[in-house]
Length: 299
Image (cartoon, rainbow, N blue to C red; front, side):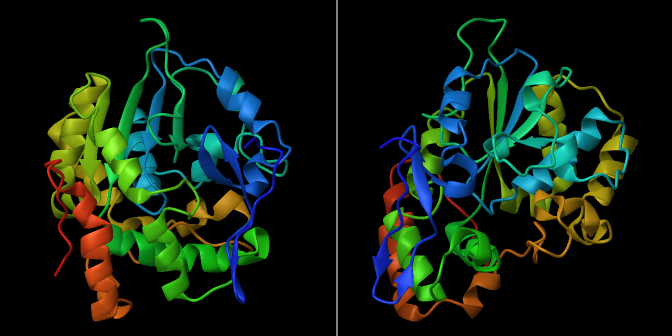
């Protein structure tokens, strides 16, 4: 199915958000329907100093964007929109984007994407082999955060349905960017590649300084312990909330949802019924069995 074919499933009175398929990935129609994104991602040429920040939606990519931007910019706090500093790759061809053109940005290019491993651009030589920093978050919190975000995006995506309907979509892998399980496992299988760093949201919450050190080692960036602590303090959820104007969706303050919501680990308990917990444990977490990948659910 090509990016010029619009799809929108329905179930009675409820409906998915409008989507198109690009490289086998379900994407929001506003990014890829007749925009040229399929050609863009197919022809995109990576550079060896490119850094992709990757994760399934609502897994901590915005947080990681800010952390990595500060690592590259000596701990500077900026009120400029995060998408102007670390471009959202998947939004590159959105007709109304306010972010700069990725292809003309000076190196090193810092980019965020939700693309699974099989679809993301990859270099074919040492000159084009870039780095990927992947962040994964437990699916219970992901689905709750994702639902609340999609609900606010409904005027754009045309999604309509309660949490139970969205959770069912999540389990079946029919939300934007596909199956959470396939997404995280696809990247987990490459966690030992020398150009892939696999992080967990929960580890960042527990000990951000240690994760910053891992990131710096991976990127070959030498920063002082004082700078590590400074960035960690400036990138707490509360600190970023104080600069929330930098994290608006497509930089249109108040019109579309802010990327920052609650930043919790165990908040999913307010949404899940015992029956839904059982479904997630069997149909989502169960698919991780044997992989060695586990998550702290904040129980």
